[in-house]
Image 1 (cartoon, rainbow, N blue to C red):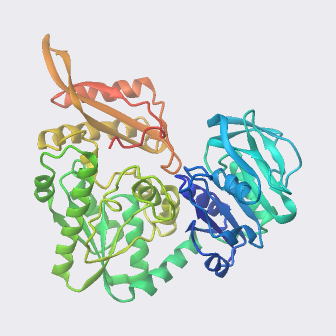
Image 2 (image 1 turned 90 degrees about the vertical axis):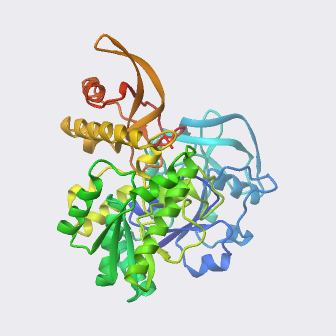
Image 3 (image 1 turned 30 degrees about the horizontal axis):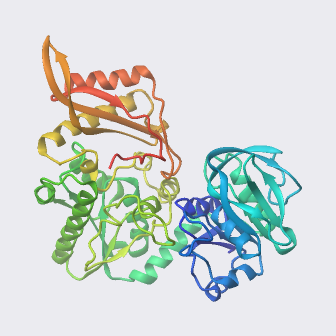
Length: 509
């Protein structure tokens, strides 16, 4: 099977590159930027990609690969920081840009290029850089420019290619075509990787690691943990026991509904644990979002460990961790910036008595849904909107209190009901309510009120790494607002969030 490797220099979008490559049916792995070249060669890649990154190549602490990487006997593609790094190390000059580029730009081709073959003379691309190439290294030539910078370079004889823009993001509409050219015209990949092969490889890897040892899977009720459970169950069968924990911050009736769903439709061995008092006691008085996430992550593991002791001799814990969770929580492959902890990644305690099995850790949500369909997961499971591991605790801004939870549960249910009724549930990536830490003056029944404010959030996304706010119809927003104000006691105002990611995240905390 053909393989392309990515060296990660800390870009938040490194995994998007891998995702686009896998979409083109080519297997891809991400390695830390400092991976020894001997290890890279052992993997026999058809091509190497140098990712973007947040630093300048000439800064003293900037990340650099094993110097032997530049002598790789095969195609090498540098993206953003990766292009600047290749130019810098091959004898060119990189310098701070007179005019930085962040966002959409118009690219103009300025010469024949195998990398850009078949693409129009001008096209929209997405830029994110504060440095430019000031002078090309020997042998390289410019094949595309924007009004501010060199946008693409190549040294075809040595199979060296560079892109200043990001072909992996949706804001570069023809970016997939650029990567397709690299994979097929330049690397000559055969394109024999797909979801079925991922399942086959994952099941084999889980069997090798877990064998016949007892394993627990922590279910959340969402598609991620459901797919992880089915994947591990296919590998180890009855050696898997699933645990679904009521952490006190679930949606209305979620605990009962999810237990019934798993037992009746997926036929998994599921234990239900009501630990709501335990979690809420620890969350009392806590307002900081990072602290809330870490408390929930730690308590979650302790509850799972308690259940493992009851079963006896459990060695492994399965979680439905996805790559967006990883990249926002910790720097795993490269020197990425931490955005926020996720309860099942950066929120986990340092000491754990169970070894983690995270078979979906390198996948995005849409890829997980494809795997779920391939495994026979019912469509109602596959299409469920994402729900954060810390639950409603990160949708209450401030302290988590029973009264606030009751208000938010009712408001959130109304949002879901109205989105479904209007036929928009499958048209948006995620839609939910947030309880704000402010009160506002209102008038109800000719009397003054001073009550809570609910924010409604609905976004459109492909993979959760970037998102645009969803322009829901005004009559739908009116229906949501009217029902919340009239049916949820303690709320007199509803606002709609029109922030995109970036600069905002999808969840408020």
